[in-house]
Image (cartoon, rainbow, N blue to C red):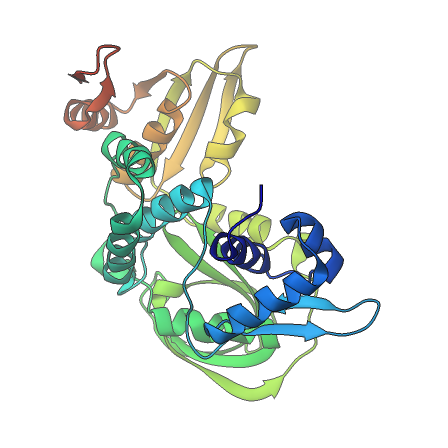
Length: 332
């Protein structure tokens, strides 16, 4: 069946938005047309404002370039749902102003979704709830995040004011290498020039980062992995609150949850384990219990105040699902 030009142009745009370079014969095969038709469709997209670059020659092809404005995007069903869900949880990120921008974008997207996709997104949103736990002073400045990301990319020296956990603020000059996220926290892995050693900096504790205009040669992060370095640094922070948890799962199955948690295995079995976890406060211990409970049954053996906190949390959580007959079912 011959495709209509509009539908074909949208399919071509969808391919080009992968931001890889496509040879003309590849696009022709995908669209089931001639290369001459591909050239006409590319010209049509350019007339609509899409900056399509063309490179001649045997190894040339077509590629969608960055333009002066954001043109409409073409998403398939799964991509549209993924973007909608991502925007929903970006609205809860610990980045100043991100919540409002994400919700505006989500509103625009959901208005355009067909009913079948809107139902999928609505089911996800209505069945999942989040626990707000980041304090107001834990919010990351988006401009600071952009400055540091660019400095990591360009290998540019950066200075900023930093307030560590002991409250003694000071100016730091660093060589930024990598940004790392851990839950709602953002960290910068950098070589601290004043101390002559690697350091981990929490982004919510730094202010006014500025590029210095000088550049450095990249160093090898200890262990070769920024995420592991941050995990080790986080583990060195004093954590006065401890809990003993019995979990109905093999210890190896908990690696994904416990990776960012200060913990020690106490008892190990083939299908269960007992672990000791440590944190800065009771609320974060409750978060660890909640995350473990997503995949296994968890019992708080001690302390009693954590067990009471988790019990209160459980009474406030609701789970909704659809009955086979289409009616709602709500339980606690």
